[in-house]
Length: 154
Image 1 (cartoon, rainbow, N blue to C red):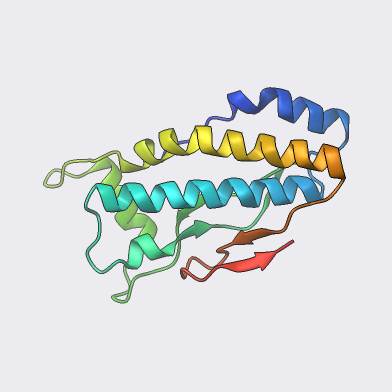
Image 2 (cartoon, rainbow, N blue to C red):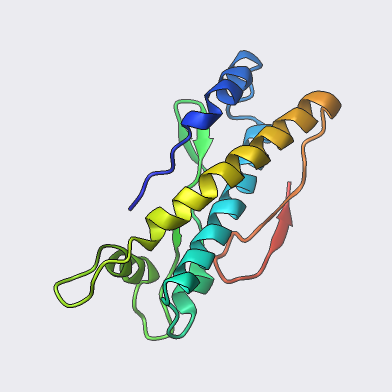
């Protein structure tokens, strides 16, 4: 599916690198905050494109575990698990996004990511500015399970 563009965050990433914070607690909090913005945009886009049947796929949109890529942390956002019939939610999302011979692609993930990019950038810049001003790492409400239940983590 689409890859999220972080080019607008280059200065912030350089600052984090200079301070040795690319993979520390603040980086984890920032990734979780970004994930929540992206997840919300994915859910909104799926709804806007009429991709609700049972709601299982939309409710399952969440993130995988933290990924460490050369001292930078990240998470993938996608529909997790299977629906009540045992169909993989990620497979449904893929088909709805790209289409098949009989189903036209809606490119709903591209639309979601386009809407998420400025929201993520703004939120991460604010978190970083607050961290620099206070030294405090925010508590981010995350939906780690993809079951629609929000949990608070640090």
